[in-house]
Each structure stands twice: as structure tokens, then as C-alpha cells.
Length: 198
Image 1 (cartoon, rainbow, N blue to C red):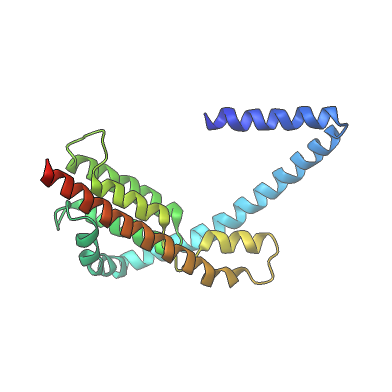
Image 2: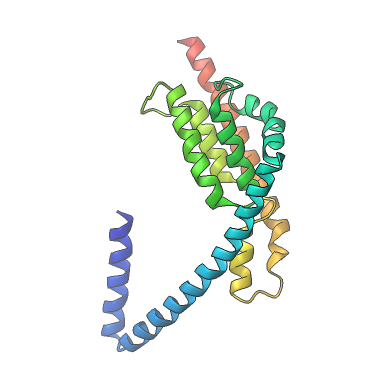
């Protein structure tokens, strides 16, 4: 569906440019955008490689494992339906740590693994469990101490101070994560009360 939407918008833009006599500008913009996209990809590859390397060093140094153990009380509060020693906790902790460090590309694979484990705990049901919904909300709200992607984009496009976004990014993601957690806790309690009433 998204491919069709993008295709329609591109076709509409080309037809409009042709009708208004600006088709040459479309060609120029396409070439300039292609060069810019390649430059941005190279920049992001460098940033991604550096942070992924740091994550691997932290993993081998035991820092990630220590952070995972430190997150156990938080995980137990947020995901009461997940057994304490279940593999899902490890994946969810790794996902949360990656998101906090602004490593969305590192968070995605472990997030998918966490969802697979949560689905098994949900007996393979096609209806998401409360724990699955909570994890998705927290993953989307994504508390970030270092918004690596945004800093890289701002640097690429000539920002005088690419890191000035850190404070506002932290505040925005803190509010969104807190709102997500509060909503999840309330929704779980409401669901529990309805279950008791039934």
C-alpha cells in the first residue's frame, strides 16, 4: 500500500511539473537528491559502524549484561506476565538499551526476537498480549539519551551545533515514554478488573 502511495505521489509530481513547464527541474532535483542520498548513507554508515562497534565492546566487557541485570526490576514491573529468567527479558533489555543510546538499527533485530519470545509466551495467539502491547509502546516511544540519527542528519545538512538537540530530544522522549508506561499500567489494570468482573 505504501509503495502505491509513494508511486502515486511521484507520478502526480512529474505530471504537474510537465503541465507547468518545470520538467527540467524534476530531472535536476532527481540527480541532486541521488548524490545527497549517497552522501547521507556514507555518513550514516560511519556513525552506525562506530556505535555498533561500541555496543559490541560494551557487550564483551560485560557492561550490557550488567545493565540487563539492572533492568530486571523495571522489566518485572512493566512485563509481569514474563517469567524472571525467560529469554524475552534479555532481548527486551537489549532493545531498550539500544534505544536509549539512539541505536535504532541495533534495537530492531533484538526487538523482533523479543516479540517472537513474547508470542510464544502468548501461546502463538494472533491477538497481542498485554506484555506485547507494552513492549511495542515502550519501543515506539524510545527514550533516548543520545539521538545519534538526528545528530548525524543535522551534521550532514550543515547544522552549526548538531548536538544541541540532545536536551530537547531527551525531554521529548522522556515524556513520550512516561506517557506510554502510564497508559500501559492503566490499561493492564482496567483489563484485570474486567477479567475479575467476568
